Figure 1 (tube, rainbow, N blue to C red):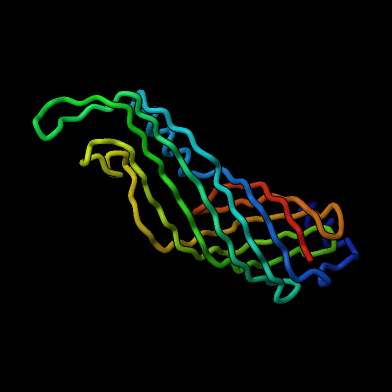
Figure 2: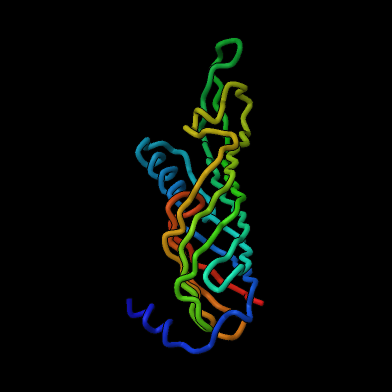
Amino acid sequence: MIVSLFALNVNAQSEDYKSTISAYVGYSLTGTIVKAADDALGSDVTVTGIPAIQVAYDFGITKWFSLGLAGSYQTFNFDIPEYSYLDANLNEVTEAADARFNRMTFGIRPLFHYANTGKLDMYSGLRVHLINRGVNINSTDENFTAEDLSITEGTRFGVGIVAYGVRYYFTDNIGAGLEIMWGAPYIGALQVNYRF
């Protein structure tokens, strides 16, 4: 509420800037679930990954509404030092195996800006996108699939809710902010912005 009052008192308007390019680094629920499942199994599998990374472009239709495009990427690596299976002759084979899980999204994001002033921009909206999930497995076991890692592959439709976003501009063009979201590709993200 205090931030909203501050925003309404700033005189400079942001109507001079129609386009904003943003880069995000986010914390995802998928990463938490993957790591928690690994911990619960108590296995010797090592899971590493990168946070959700997103690039977005937003175009201001009006001062209070923008329409944008966004794409994101996230990956996890599963390193299994001692993976065992039975070959075609029913001999037990033990090997080092690994798998890489990739998740990409691409979609549109209509945003409603309710405190869009010269330095501060607060917004909420939606993200309507396609989510593609894939797994690359490195093992001699032909029966080792994504299901063995409890991962579903394929492309599906998704909707995320941008619950709250805020950007603060330190100069006329460069700013930083954060975004809280329900749905893919992240729960919370830090961002850097360039508007023109």
